[in-house]
Image (cartoon, helix red, strand yellow):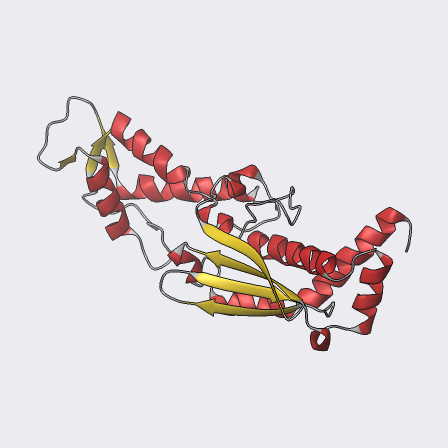
Length: 236
């Protein structure tokens, strides 16, 4: 099989899919030489290439990383959720008995979804916000915060074959957010990833066009990764 890296992206209403496979036509001679020097041939190279691509894609799904002056991705994601939920509801004392009091998680979820804008957030505190008691507010907030990283998790490897131990646990904990599998046809290995989180297709989270752009530049990213591996091995 070839030692190249070819990729494709498809998106529908419920998921976004990525395919990464070997293809000699898509690879530079220099990249093949580096892979051979690193001892990565055939399927081993496709596994390595898919792992590099996977880490790059995961890093570029909201909340973005790596860490910046603004904070770490997980902290930024949780902060955005807290602001959004606080903007959607007003916390009242336990003795409040008004008719506008929200009393259940399902109702909170529906009201929160209704208040979110096209970017998935509640941008400012609305007038006449629904009222909730302290305990219910924080129970709901905890359930929403627990979802941070789910869009990233849809592209994260669950079976460990790609050796991506560097993908943090707050991302890989969402093991039901997508699927990954490896197949072989006509002696060409192929990795497939399907992100089942529908909001990942939206541009503010990832979007198919941004994903295609990332993968189109993947040979350059892969070359840098191989050079780093060779330096560690003392072969460069």
